Image 1 (spheres, rainbow, N blue to C red):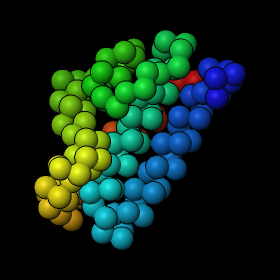
Image 2: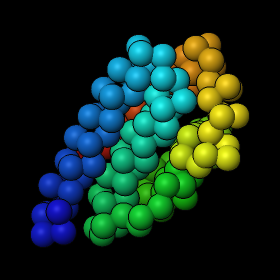
Image 3: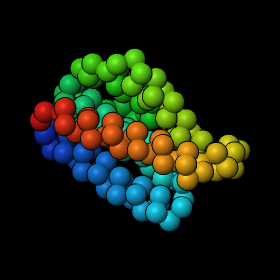
Amino acid sequence: MFAKSIKEQIEYWLKSAHHDLETAEALFTSQHYDWCLFLAHLVIEKVLKAYYVRDNNAFPPKIHKLDYLAEKTKLSLPVETINFLKEINDFNLEARYPDNKFQFYKLCTRKFTEIYFSKIKDLYKWLLKEIKI
């Protein structure tokens, strides 16, 4: 991936995000709600990394903090979107670390996941619409 052009790197991140979204959909269908939201976080992370590559002409940092990634792009996001990014940052940590996992698992009811997953998919669609390669 390092030898690829900027356009190829952006396409890589977007294709990977699309793949993760399909997997998140399958996880939702199979009622693995905690992992659905974990992957949904990765979907947004990967799209933001595509923006990072586009706007900085550089490989993105190896971080998962969505608000930080967004801040390092030329995206102009409303405060409520930044706050949403901060909120869903927790889905990355909560699902990954065992001491928090069971608590997060219990939180991820169908209704809870439906609400967040829907908002994440809406944000994903908007970000895709806005990116110009």
